[in-house]
Image (cartoon, rainbow, N blue to C red):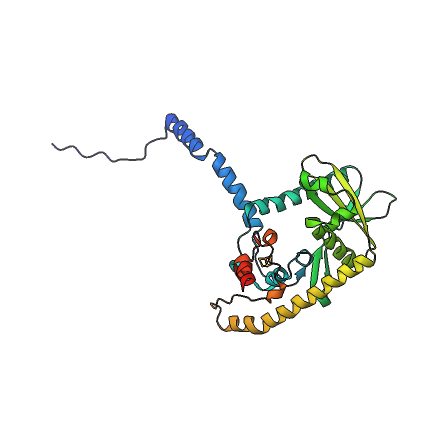
Length: 281
Ligand code: SF4
């Protein structure tokens, strides 16, 4: 007589199975060094990826030594730009972290940190900027502060106000001039912090004849960029509205290009601008 095949039901969970599966799961999800580094880098690259064209002239682009850079920032869509490098993305993040840490320490010391990251603007020139913060202590007036986190090398280069008239530091000087104008202040502080040792240096800038001239130059540049942007809106954006797949490579006047290896090598618009080619013709 044939035996009936036994019906296979679900087996009861055994303690050994539970322990084995638990251990397997642990092994599979153990965090590796590679995963951590990959995630950390991807996070910073994502965070600093440009999402849209600038609708105004950011003060920081006006302080750039190249005028073409300011024009490209208004007209080049993000997908045409060179992606930001990891080193730069990490430097930006480090600067922000240092600033938050500084603000926290100030509050712990009993100082008042106010109106941080407030947006400033000058609509007739389409200029926008962000102030770092205002700083005060009980019974003192507020100081307007621009915070800069620096490498030990750069930190030892800043000794006096005159240091901000040389090389890379000129950019910071122009930025403070712009902030003084937008914030309607006759004085402004730059607080420099050595990100390695934690030491601070504070410099007080005052509005004078030279600052007025520098600001006039920045306003004139903003007007030139706006004019170029208007042309772009009227011509290229209309064409793009008709055919969104059109690949328009924005052009800027050659005279506005800096063509300096030091700045062009890392520039996010280098592939569009092609500074070396233009220099030869
Ligand atoms: S590649 Fe050089 S010239 Fe062109 S926008 Fe950038 S900095 Fe200016």
